[in-house]
Length: 114
Length: 114
Picture 1 (tube, chains in turn brown, cyan):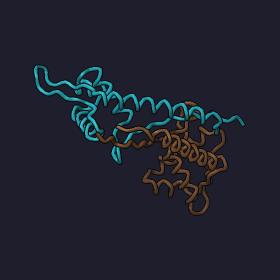
Picture 2 (cartoon, one colour):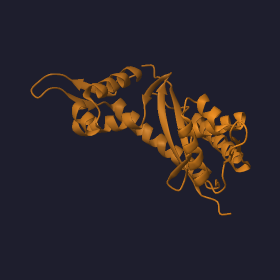
Picture 3 (tube, chains in turn yellow, purple):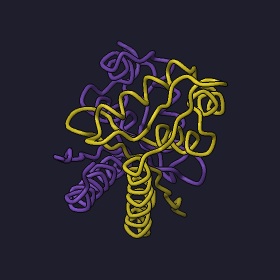
Picture 4 (cartoon, chains in turn red, green):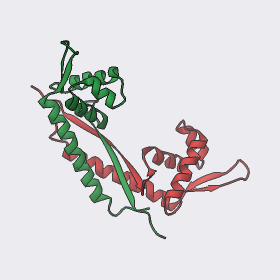
């Protein structure tokens, strides 16, 4: 009987202690903040409420040893947001880790079939 | 500044082609069917509807090259269900793969911090 080739998908999450720090969605949020300079625009792009995005940013800032998003309040046109160096590093490390896991899974799954 | 240690969690899914074949939940369903000999009891244990469990079993049976659950219909007290050898192998391969990925992630994440 012909066996089906198995493909494996995965997701990873970074935790600091027992608290979720980063996942695929949060990384996308940070990248959109980086691109738009605004939590509000980033949230819209992900069909997320501003409130939810703001809360995620606060959680990430609290859970990292250095904040990942710097918020500037007030001024004409409202406040903006920028990704800090620590935030850039976190994004980069997440993507690098994802790549490593993807490579490992691809190598290890060659001989799986059902 | 003290850096927070990062822990990494993950989930994996087995696909046959583009279709989901097995994930953590489906493996649990198979294991409960194996234990109870009944799709209905297995579903109850997972707070899943019988209909949903039955559908999952059908999908798995269609997507594997050999069925993973054998259903026996009718008779006094209704039908039962047993896990086939192919099903046992699938469960085992899923757990083994999870272990390998867990080990890899544990090794690779030692030096991550934020």
